[in-house]
Amino acid sequence: MGSDQLLSDKKYEKMWLAGVWIFLAVHVLDTYRILWDNFHYDWYRVMQADLPDWLLCVRFVLSLALRILIFWAVAGVLTRRDQYRKFFLGLCWFRLAIVFVHHQYPSFVYISNYLGLNTEDFQQTALWFGHWYYPGAVVRLIGAWLEEFLLVFLTIIFFIHPRVKRLFQ
Image (tube, rainbow, N blue to C red):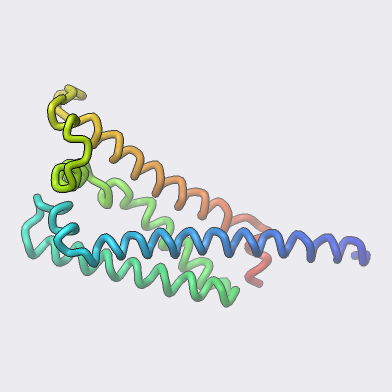
C-alpha cells in the first residue's frame, strides 16, 4: 500500500469517525428527550392511561432500563470496541422490533387531549379499516413511527458498513 493510499484511508477514516459521533449524538439527544418525558410521570401516566398501574410501572422500568443501556452502549462505542458496537446494534434492532409497541395510537389521543393539541381533531373522526380515528393523532403517530424507524434503521445501516466496522478493530 503506497503512502498516497494510506493518507487517503486516514482522511476517510476521520470522515467515518465523524459519522459515528454524529449518529451517537443524535441517539443521546433522542434518549435524553425520551427520559425527560418519562421523568414527568404525570405526562407518562396520561400517555399510558389505558394501562393498569402494575403494567405502567413495568413499562416505565423497562423503558428506563433501555435508556440506561443506550447510554452505556454509546459510551462503549466511543471507546471504539467492537463488542459495544455490536451491543449498540442489538439495541437498535430491539428498538426497531418494538417501534409499534412503543408508539401506540391511544397514547397520542390521550396526550393530545391532555395538552389541548389541535382540539379540532377531536371534532372530526375518520373511518379507517372499520374503526374510528382522530386524524391529527394518526398523523402524529405515523410521524413518531417514521422518526424512530428512520433513526434506528439508518443507524443500523451505518454501523454495519465495512469501513465503520474497520474503525472498531
